[in-house]
Image 1: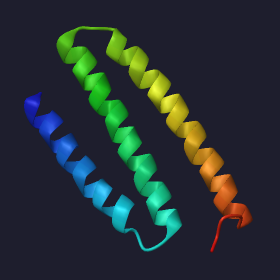
Image 2 (image 1 turned 90 degrees about the vertical axis):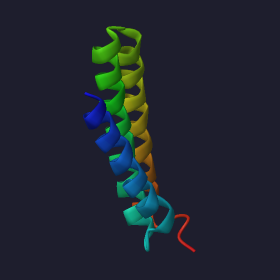
Image 3 (image 1 turned 45 degrees about the vertical axis):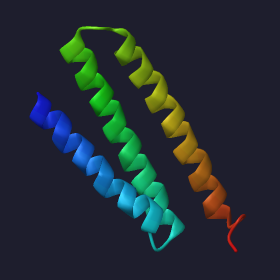
Length: 84
């Protein structure tokens, strides 16, 4: 299980590189979405390993807020508002 967690953390670091160095704002948005999905999976794995349900609750709330954030940002970027 520790190997899976380490691989997930390494992939989050790789995605963060794209998040901060993405050539376009759409690349950054997709990197944010990918990173947040990996954090949710990591929280679910931690919940299973530690046998504490609170981490699953946190993962569900985090996933819902992340989804809403991505949708709102995508709509905002699609309209062209904020494009400089």
